[in-house]
Length: 272
Image 1 (cartoon, rainbow, N blue to C red):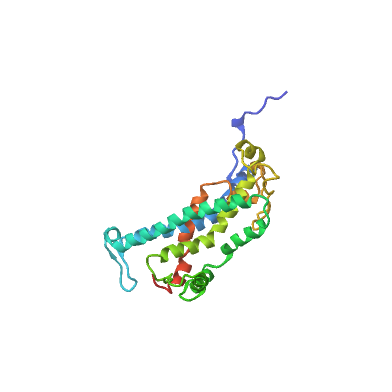
Image 2: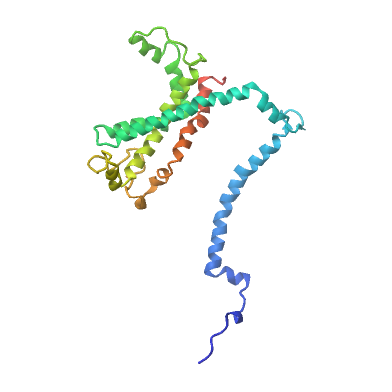
């Protein structure tokens, strides 16, 4: 009976031979599939970021050669009042995001019951999310202009002296936050409904919640989502990737303030 060969006596594989092995093919596929996403990530994320950091140390007006100014741009940012005024305006959207998430949780809880017309209200509340931001700007521009829809409705109930909703600086930011809430609250409602539907019945029963059983809670078809959401976490489907990270609700609540440039631009006709 021949003795087994020692592992050290095996001939070393060449690079071409290693590429034909299962392990080598796995490594090649991994590198190939990662190359394009990493290239795009670097080109459109990290490279522009580092270039912007570089540009921040120069005086650029695009009409003459740039000149190095050091930290002067950063000093201007922290000493100019208009920069802090812009940050102050963002507080309106921070408060609005809290109201938006609170109302979304309330509506989602109500619509999780088997109530009449729940599918209609789900679609109606989610529909504004599908409208283009510029279209929303035109809608509310005519809705809020003096003498138009809102003033007419208020006049029917006896309120005649109405302010200019878009030009009165004491209320215009609140009005714009309300417009943003109308447009984006639907996506939070859908996420909360899916999250409630994905919780197991036993867990709901142990918490003593009234919709802890299938008879008290819808099964559930979101009406606007990609399909039914399984209750068990291990059976979570396509929609669950949006449901389980609860911390994303805070980010989604802040996103309207970032995405509302088109609508605000349309309301102000290019001005502040």
